[in-house]
Image (cartoon, rainbow, N blue to C red; front, side):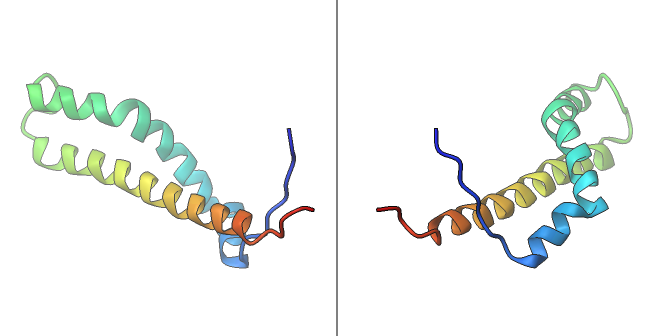
Length: 88
């Protein structure tokens, strides 16, 4: 197994070290674990009766926000790997 080190720009490093990333990390648990089941149970009418119009969009927004952030972070990581000089 090979270990590599990549360089990402300062903006991403600042985002990852901030409290914002802690919030994103907490939302990941919600987005992957709870949001799909909450959407399902709300659609079936088991929970949040009368508040479906706000609960479902909040869950979808959580899923999309986490996905957007992770895709952008992965893109920066892959760009850092691709900029690395090949070994000889």
